[in-house]
Image (tube, rainbow, N blue to C red; front, side, top):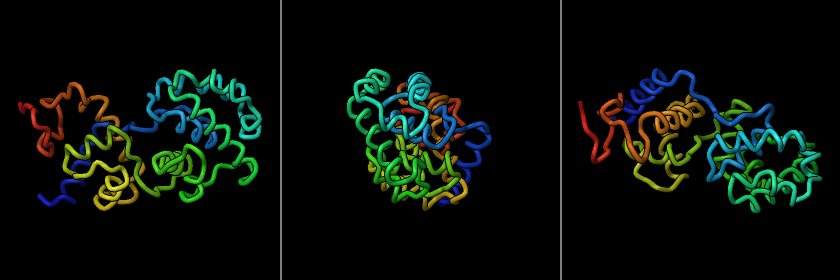
Length: 213
């Protein structure tokens, strides 16, 4: 089957399976989304969602977070892991937002990736979920793994995976695609114990040990 045709069929199946798929991070504005996404690196959304309420209760704006003590930040965000580096990044990012962007989160990929702790993945999360801008596709561990199983990409490099996905899916679905693949990875196609026999994408999948029913 033509790869592009197959990708569109996969998209429609996922949309039907997970009609409510969305960003699982809790946030009230784009600043909170940006900080939460930085904290989510190598950490579950569940853990981030436990940490951000006290963080934003104490520091609800870039202006206030920019003045926070590094020690206080480290203590609050410690459960997210790599907290020392993350604390430095969110403090520096807040200071840059205040000084260079009038305390506003940029809505441009090139500007976002200049911020400490922000790469294309984080920038795509903010642009898509905060601004409704589909500048690219978020590639996390679920997206990477499932995209390879479905032969949507042959690469292990997030940038190349993103480029492959961009070439296969209409731009209007770039934002939702990652949420759909993440939902599928959590509910059916888990890394440790995939439910292959119950997977509607079975015929597109190249998982070596899958069982068909």
